[in-house]
Image (cartoon, rainbow, N blue to C red; front, side, top):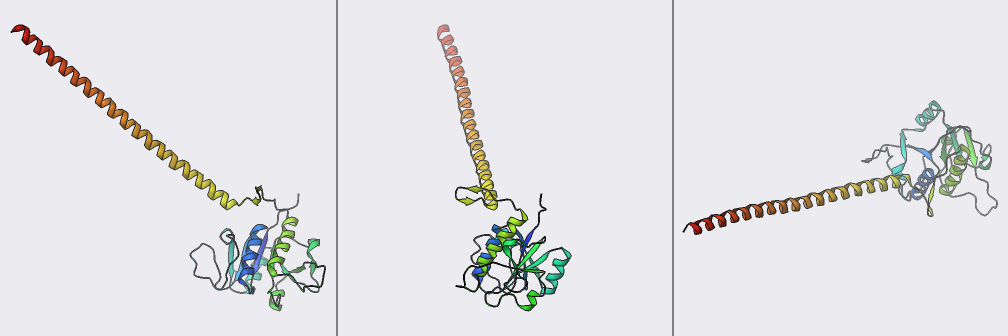
Length: 239
């Protein structure tokens, strides 16, 4: 059985916010486990470290389910990748770039996507261990949108790494986070239902107890009345 490898995403110099959100969504869909970024930490109350100036429009809720790691610069990022045996795979068309269809992956891999206009700049290329490209079959466009390209790249890596396909429910893939929320919701419903039934039972017991008390009181009053009648009858007989 093939060894399980992990995939990661490295975001830097992506210009369009909508593309960033789409890339994050693709990373979540194809089981990339962490997003690396460069920049100063933003003022964010969430547990993730998020760089200032980054927008995640279009992520469709996947932002909250991803782990983020923030670097100060490219050098720090490269040192981290080397220490953790992570190959840096640049997504770029050019000499030495390998066809993605051939799955030229080597192990744990972080994907570095270039800017929409300029691609990977020389500083980016310098930290890459390899490059891949997506083959096209016409000359009608020079390249793919970076968000579209990311989905194709991540999908090929997921297949190569042997990630387990997510189960389907209806016409959608099951969302583990939503499953967890739904399970918690049902749990809370059961708790509330239990409280309601307990309250009803206590109320019923209270009514029953009140009836018992009333019956006991009526019994005592009847006995008292009978005793009083007996005394009055005895007095009448004496007279």
